[in-house]
Length: 357
Length: 239
Image (cartoon, rainbow over all chains, first blue to last red):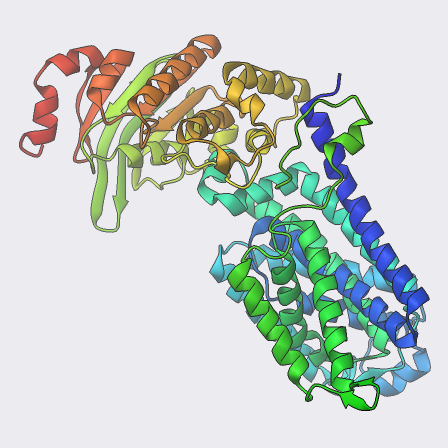
């Protein structure tokens, strides 16, 4: 005899699997059907999946919008650059690096993980202050944190190179590397969401007072989610750096912050599936519009959108989503297999269940 | 030893005094109604005991242990559970998740499963709707859920703020029936804020009548309904 609850748990367990298959299919399609540019677009999209899913671990479960997560990407990218760049190059580009860092010449994988860990450590320290605030006050403090990190990075020239770019990062990101990290982020995000801490945090999102009355220490759970969340944003930042090969502080500032927010809002902040679908939807729309701006030829005539229309159309699309579907494309729902699939044919007499978190 | 002891408790919001030098004790297993007109300080009293409202001075004890100064989540973990006014359930979480929220810090997993089973037996509708979002329940069902969620923390003392608020009289009857059953079953100490002294008299128990942040009468609820104390509390000269 299988209970409703067991069915429900099996269904929930299919969510990370289906999301991973979705992005796998996306990569396979991009690599086999498209050209090199399409493959690069796929890599970039999957790096964004890592970033936005990381962001969702905190923002989605706590309901607190953070404007500071791009700063974690910044830290991750620079840590990876500091540890992987050729020591000779570091001597010229970043003369102020401490000797211990300047000598390092690490492989890329430990560098990316370290980038994530340093970002997580920074989140633990900064979050200890920021997360004592609630609601909009926490959001504004996180924005101040972003501005602080950006200012420090732009002016700490001997160590960060200041506003001039750090170049020469090993460009090792293929769609498959990006896929590996995106899948890791999805798996950890769903494990966290299903944990006791994830549930407690979602309860505080719904009602802080009732959550406290149920014995939940909001601050502790928020800090845990913030730290885990920063790890994946740090890794995502490292991946971005190695994808382009060049980093500078403004690459991890307002543009990235708003892009991540926009993707999460379009997909729907209420579910992990929303985070993933939001990235895919916005990335594909941007890609299509960029190509239209370059022009497509139909017979003798070439049709092209005026330059800049991409940004405008994406903004209009976002407004339309907010107006007509304020909870995002996924509206808080998760992608999961229906009950009859997880039970086995013929054994289930259960009615279909709602799949809201 | 008294289960709950409140000694010289005062609560102020800025210049406004909500409770002034209020004292009472209650033994284990008692059912205590707190009644009185709007602004009497009923919710402030519950808030102060549960840790949601900070006391200006005074002392609150449970089993001899001082609760004053602890946060609401720490007090909840000591076995004092609060069902806040207005059925504050977690609307977008499922009914089961609502119930599990209160168990996050309990390590006795098999006892949690037993408690969940007990709740589902007491409230079959919750079992039926276990996977539905809690916001989709009716008002009465949400009140049952809020009470059940508090039960899942395995409390010794449960405080319910206005369980009848916004519910049809028939549903209120049902809520009280269940509350009394649960109290008998688990030996709970129960504190209930109830505007209607007639209802309190029908359910039965001790009643504190409050007015202007003070206790103006303390006795058996059934006797209040008959006497003039109530009229005095609502319409008489301020104390």
